[in-house]
Every structure is written in structure tokens, then in C-alpha cells.
Image: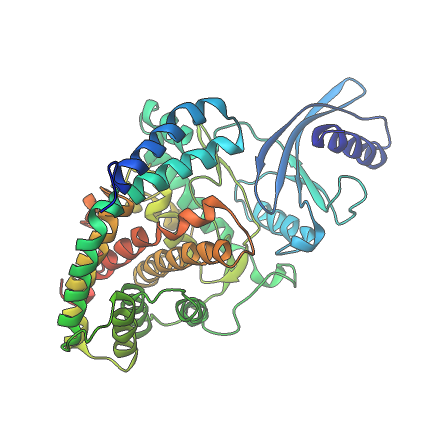
Length: 128
Length: 336
């Protein structure tokens, strides 16, 4: 175990520095880049907290959709396997199983990358 | 010498020659500095007469997507069709004046920055709905232009324009650094549900959206950035202006965060445009997918070292936003 501060706490500290003193001391195009850097630290801060649980859930959901055990595969390999199955020919049952699982996985990514993005539900603008 | 000094000097010489009299350049400012375009606002003063102009400069000739004269001819075609655009005075591929090919247009006052546009809409009752109608009418006029009159170098689809767009998305999915089952699922849906090809191939702006509009309290004054203009399905433009990323958090107002699709459609039809709901919906989903794949492509450019940039790196972490948006747009197609 590393000593405190944790990765998440350190990233929050770096973000505070970037968004505070550094931003105030820069101008022009660099200011935009500093804001982006601050936001990336916030993303990593959340990833340090939520990332491991999200990835475990992603693996569980993908194995469920695929109907086969993970067999030591990670989220990347399982995603590639699902893409291959989706491309192998139209399988309506697979797609219907995949949709809610993929939506949950994407929501998990958004909780880290852009909390609140999924508050909007596109009511009234879906396909008729 | 600064960019402003150099550009002023080059433009003064160019305009003096064109107008056959001594021209001074005053009040030059840089409006935007995109990767492929530099827009310089200035006053041209000749014989006591002051003309407000804009020079759109391609910094390096090699970086042109479309030659500058093609972009200028697109603006002229749109103007002739009755779409509000800045009038083109000159276009030249001569790189000796300002270090790159350029064209000069009339300067049109107004807001272009999306947040400022939305602020103006907020404090002007009725402006948002009016602008949505004007956007519809502007697009209908552009789409009424005779595509056969477009510059021969304007890109055009080899066949069915929807299939052509889908093939590009397919290639982008195959090139992803990380597999995306969400995009794969959506692409396959778009492939199975592709509407019939449009009856007419028209001029398509390609990037008509909040951010490329000049807006005043009286409404839409001009549309900018004709770099991506091509021939294709007119519904592509209608499906692009409603993308969620151009609403700037005003999610419920689909047209640029200021107006409704019903208003835009009414404006489009009143100006003689033929609206096709199935193709509009299809392009809307394809546009969302395309933007998501574009963001992944930006991250790749950073990671492979071709364009190192923290902004492009950050784009990679925005892909999930577009996966979410595409899934939500198509959710009924999966019984959800």
C-alpha cells in the first residue's frame, strides 16, 4: 500500500493547482490547454476511485451477453469478441441482450469521464 | 514582423493592385485560428472610403482539403441560390501575398461563438424559433442550387450517398485502437435500416451548425466554414445541425440549442425544400456515430505522435458521450 495521499487525492490536488494558480498565470491558447489538463486530472481522480469496480462490472456484463465465461480475458478482449459476434450476421436476440448491457457499460464510463452527460434521455427524439 | 503586420502588408498590396488605387489596411484582428484556416478581420481604406472585409487564409498550401477557389465557388453558388453567406470579393491561390492561398469576403457583424449566440437568443423573445426557421429556409435554398453547377473539384459520392457515409464509418470502426461494441451495434443497425437513396443529389454544406453561423438580434445573417462542402443527400445537413454537441447544454432544443426541429422543418418546407423524415433520422444517428469515431481518431493522432496535443488526447475520453448519444437515439430499434 502506498502512503497517503492516494492517487485520487493527488490528482485532485494537481487539478486544483492547474485550475487555480496555473490558470490565473497563463493566457491565450495555453489557458485552454490548462483547463483541459485540469479536467483530465478530474477524470483520472474519478477513475482512481471508480475504475476497478467499473471494469469488473464491464467484464461481468460482457460475459453474460456472450454467454461464455471470461476465461481470463479482460474487458478489451471480451469487447472484441462481442464486436466479432455482432458482425457475424444479424442476431436479433444477441442485439437485444447486448443493448442494455452496453448502455450500462457506457454509463459506467461516463460516471468517470463526464458525470451528468447521461441525465438527458433523448425523450421525444428517438426513431419512430 | 507579427502575423498581423505581415498580413496587413500583403493584403494592402493585393487590394491596391485589384482596385487600382492605394489601399491601407486598418484595425486588423484575428477572429479564429483553426488548424486549417486563419480568419483575419480588417478595414480596407481607399480614398476616404472604408470597407469591412475578412480574409480567410490557408496557412500552408499543402494543408488544403479543397483548393481555396473551390471553397470560394461554394460560397458564390450558395449566395446565388439565396442562402445568406458572406459575399466573395476575391479568391486567389497565389501564396506570395500572405503566405498562403486566401479569399476575401464582406465582413458581417454578429455573434458566432455558440455561448454568445445562445445568450442573445435568451434575451431576445422569439429569436430562437425564428432562427430555427431561418436555418431550415437557408438549407432549403442551398439544396435548391443546381448541383451540376458546383465546381468540378467539389467531392461527390460515388453512388448511394448513405452507403458511402456508412462505408467511411465502417472503416473508422475497423481502425479503432480499442473495440467499441456500442458503435458496432449502432453501425449494424444503420446498415440494416438504410433508407432509399434521395431522388436528387444536392450541394451539402457539410458543417452547418451553431458555431458556424453569424447571428444578430434580427436572426441568422450568414453561414460560415464551407470547407467541408460536398455533393450528397440534403438531409445530411438537416441531421447535422441537430446533433447534441451543437446544443451547448440546451439539450431539449435540438436545433443548435435554440430551436425545435418542427420550426426548422417548417422553414425548410416553406422555402421549397423536400423533407424526408426517415433519411433525416438516419443522418442524425450516423452523424452522432461519425463524430464519436472522429473523436477516437483525434486521440489516435495524439497517441501515434502525428499531432501531439492534450486537446486531442482529451478527445479520447469524450468517445463515451457519443456512444451514449448514439445508443439512446437508436434504443427503440433494440426494443429498449
